[in-house]
Each structure stands twice: as structure tokens, then as C-alpha cells.
Image (spheres, rainbow, N blue to C red):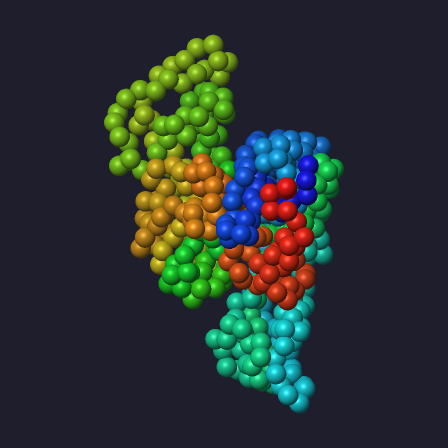
Length: 415
């Protein structure tokens, strides 16, 4: 296949992988999705590699199919990480400007960020993301970009995410064994929040909740800045397990019942009626009332929301979120937003997907299931134009500029 500017976003989910691939048409300034797919992976548990052979096989199958569908090789692979092994916290860094001219440069900013990163972390952990929250010059706060300004003391607040080096290296090995390279790794909540939340929501105070199968990711934005993030090791697969156990049917059947008939709030139960449930051995069926499915789902959803409420309560920012955005596969269940309003104390909650003005593609790819993979592509392509402090390195130019230079040496559609 021809060398191309194909960017792939790989979302490492709970027992599955989701990938979106896109190209940037520089002539029309459009980021266009050309392929996308989600597949199960038995080698992942709670977004962590449990079987490297199975994971590698799934990566090969998924990415090969993406390349066949698009007709191009993957030029850049951005991988989204999640899971309970990730930890996020804020820190403060300073740097004294001792030069006579006192004019702050990007190098000064980089050194302030490096000082903010110089803090003890767990022995097995490595830095995944470092995001700037704001600067101060000579104690004057509220500065977003100090480059070119004058001052003697430069301060910076950062939001740092670390993760288990063992888990990350196992994932990297699985991807490399499949014949690919992890070009970039990100805490998946970071690009997801930047694409799904509006700037107004970030400014007023927003909570983003990514409802996955075995994990839930929570982020809090205040004054346009990510102040808090956390992954919770529980997810919507617990609903599937409850249905499977109480309806005496297989997990696959329970999953299909959940997706077809499941609601989490009584007002969304359209009408009473019966639905067929295959037996565990598949040889017979029995009928149950729709309301019984609701009776199973609602308590579990409330329990999950209570876990989220506890995280928010102990975050130090419990009084700040005003609105909420729910995304991920779990957000598709009718009634989820009502539970968020009732149990999280938010004024308004909506389901969120990546906006069409950020990336073009078939409507099927704008399903919340693809939101993280889509956001990874948008982030990597630099559609937002923000600067990126990824891993342990400081990027001195916006991602858009960096990727744009890379594109110039490539054919847009592999011609």
C-alpha cells in the first residue's frame, strides 16, 4: 500500500478495542473518517492486558481490517489508555528568569513544566500526560500564554496523569508483536473531554463521565481547565452480569436484552409487555415482563452513579460542576442522564459525541461507542490547535503544526 497520512485512534476498552482512522484533506481543510471498527478482545480486562497473545492477535485483526477498508497503511497510531492503574493529580512548578531582558521564552516555559513534573511517583509508574492549567508571572495569575512577556518568576500549574509502566509496556509489546507502533499514548479522558465538551461547558463548570464496560472515567472542568480526573474500576458490564444471572441466560443474550429493551428510569418504560429470554443452554425460551428488566437495571445504575458521586464528593470540587456530559457505550441506555441529574446534583446533563464540525464521516461513527477513538484522531490531527504536553516531552509547537509538517511529505490519499 502507498504511504499515506492515515491517522488511527485506538481506544483500549474493557474487553474490546475500537479504532477510527482518518485523513486530513489539506486542500479542503477537512479531517475525514475513512474506516472504523470495534471488536471484542479476550486479552483485555478492565482495559489492561491480561493475555498478550490474545491482545496482539486482536490488534493485528483490527488494524489490518482498518487498512484493508481504507486502502492505506496506518501512518500514525494514537492509543488511548484507561483503567484503575492510572492516577491523576495537580502540581505546581516555578522557574526564575535570571537574564537581563527578562523576556519569557518557550524554553523557560518548558523548564517550569519540568520542575512541576519533578515530584515523587510510584516506582512502577510513568508519566502519561502533563497538561498546563495556567501560568503566573511575578505572582500575577490568570496568564494562559506567557511567551514574550517579561518577568522574574514564572510559575505554572499542571495536571499530571501517571500509569503503570508494566501495563503500558505490555500493551506496547502487544501492539509491536502485531506489527505496529504506538506513536503516541494518552489518557483517553483528555482528548475525549476536549472534543465532547463545549468551551462554554468547560468555563461554567462541567463533569464529563465516560461510561465503559469495566471502567468509568470522571473529569471535572472549572474555568475552562481540567482540575480533576479519575478512573473507577466498575462499569456497565455489571448490568450485563446481573441480567445474565437473574434471567438465567448467557452473557451474550443478556447484553442483547440490555441493548434492545434496557431502560434505567421508569418514565422510559414505553409500555408493559413480555420479552423472550433464551435459556442458558439455548434449547428453550421463557418470557419475562419488561418491567422486570427495569427492576434489575435501575438499582445497578443507581449504584454506579453513587460510585461516581463519591468520587466527585471527595475530589475537592464537589460544588463546582453545574452541567454534565455522559458519553461512552453506557450513555446509550435511556434514563442515564436522569440518574446523573438526580444523584450527582447537576442542573443539566446531556449525552455527548464528537461534533460533526471537527471531523467528517458516516453517522454511524458518531455513536458514543466511537467517541474516544474519534477524539484520539482529532487530538492527533491537531484539529483543536492546542499545545500538547504528552508523556515526558514538551512539544514546542501546536500539534496541528507538527502534524501538518509531517503531512507535507505525504500523499493525501496515497496517490
